[in-house]
Amino acid sequence: MQLASSSPSLVTADEDPTLRATVLDLFSGAGGMTEGFHASGPFQTVQAVEMDAAAAASYAATFGDIVHVGPIGEWLATCEVPSVDVVIGGPPCQGFSTLGKQDAEDARNALWRDYAQTIVRAAPKYFVLENVGAFLASEQFGDLREATGVGGLLADYAFEAAVLNAADFGAAQARRRTILIGHHRDLPAPGLPSKTHAGRHVPLSAVLKRVRPQVASTELPERSKTVGGRVRPGPFLTTELHVGRTYSATSMARIRSIPPGGNRFDIPENLLPPCWQKHKRGSADVMGRLRWDKPSVTIRTEFFKPEKGRYLHPTEDRALTHYEAALIQGFPKTHRWVGSKTAIARQIGNAVPIPLGRAIANHLAEAMRLSRPDGGAETRPLVA
Ligand SMILES: C[S@@+](CC[C@H](N)C(=O)[O-])C[C@H]1O[C@@H](n2cnc3c(N)ncnc32)[C@H](O)[C@@H]1O
Image 1 (cartoon, helix red, strand yellow):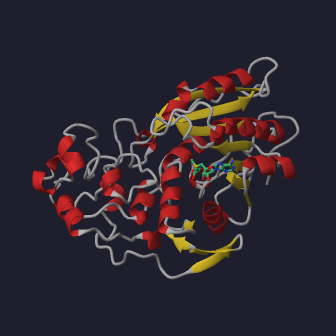
Image 2: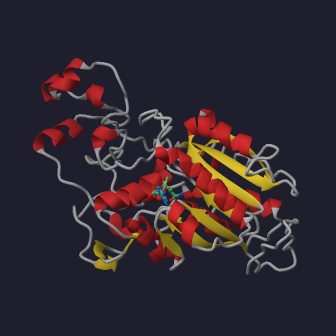
Image 3: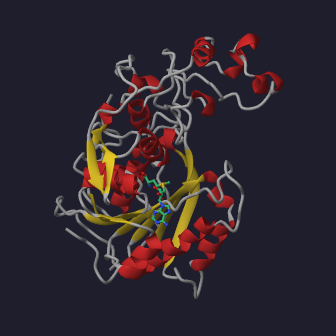
């Protein structure tokens, strides 16, 4: 049931625990943020917008046929924007990511304007914007602040933002992201969620120890689905993503030489490629082995390549599988995935960790005085 009304007065749903606040998920990817909101309880996503056909198909296979597949600009120009209680979304971040080129003119940075336009038309009570840590110091962040000033596009709204670490909210992963929560000026400022796991981070072992360490295949199961006129692999359950890759004899020898917690600096000289022989410094995460007793490093879109970061299994001589990466992100076993191995890895690495999304949703549920089916517990059992 939609709670949105023409007046943005405070929602009180204490009397009816079946009431759910409505959500619009922009740049939804495969639906990490939606998973977090649904895990919180009293939220129902009514519409998602996603340009990548495989990611949109994963979203639809998991949450139903509520995804507009296409660029947000096209959606705004041709579709009716639903009135919702909460708008969530993370415009793509390559433009100001510290990993990519700092190209201030990057057209993708202008997507925040589409995000702002959507807020004007959806008239939500709250909005949530997730982005890389560097967003907080970007020009776009300043533009957004200006837009909420007198006479600005978002003058009816104010917001607070901070860089939050998903590990402080129960994810078995250190992942720092800017989280911005906006609210209609007629409502009290909800602030940002308080850490639920400060000083008691969930170690990697909590999510991976019960996963079968052996990997039986390098290929996804044979299954396909026609999406947007193209045949794509899937849908697969998260549990079906326990697939590895083939390593050359040299790569395998390098991997075997890396002890728990080690990295490329542990590889004997005779096994090093010439470029690494010269570079004695640099990232200690390259070819790094994860540790059981700590949260994992940030799961990025190429977690399946050992040379891309600290992605080696703590005890097995291989990188993380897609299944393991999805579990580290907090995805439930029931999530469905569509696309090639590369496309699914991108969907996993791009996602907002489910425990972080859930903490944000719990915080908004409290602000909206919505009843939570779990009685307000901050954590649910981790699945592995
Ligand atoms: C960081 S990911 C979002 C992840 C998502 N919030 C989650 O938790 O799973 C950003 C997404 O924006 C999509 N995207 C990029 N440009 C877009 C556009 N112009 N319109 C719609 N979606 C777009 C990308 O395909 C990508 O899936």
